[in-house]
Amino acid sequence: MTVATVKKMTFEEFLNYDDGTDALYELENGELIPMSSESELNCRIAMFLVVCFLKLGIPYYRLRMKTEIAVNSRQVGVRVPDLVVFSEELVKIMEGATRSLILMDMPPPVLVVEVVSPNQENRDYRYKRSEYAARGIAEYWIVDPIAQKVTVLEWVEGFYDEQVYVGDQVIVSPLFADVKLTVAEILQG
Image (cartoon, rainbow, N blue to C red; front, side, top):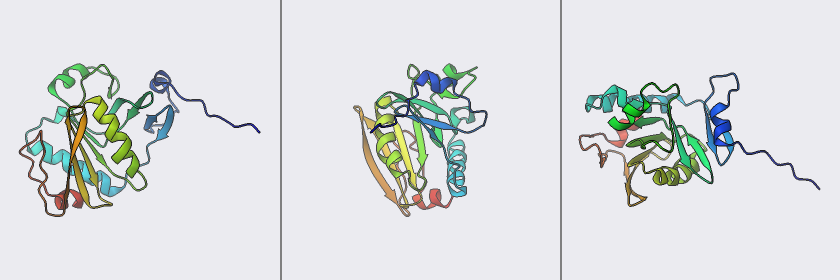
């Protein structure tokens, strides 16, 4: 009996991959993972958060949607969060880049937001959590319209401390003290 194996893609192969479409992919342990199109609700939630961060005074040039982030899994991989907040240092480093890709030798973003899609819970709650912690991302939000909650993770000594919010609870952001959003406001998109 023979077992078929799929060749794992290297990070360099991923960087040069072009299937002739505008499709986005994540690279997870050498496997190319197509990013499914977002639901209307997930898009509205991400845009709502962009507007809220702009109102807080975060400059537009520090906010990104669909930026690729190199992470360590079993090998170097790539994640594509719904929303990313850059530091000023990262903005300067990314100036002139031809691809919105944060490499391993660059400073991490200060905040990453993932909006959970159906059947993607393990990715957002488990795999990305450990990858983003290993990358030193100071704050990670998991906005979950399915479970009706927002999980705010704060990076402390290499691991994330977790606070879960539901309903009309006001989210407390360790980095953005001026955030005065409730879970209900975010989930209505």
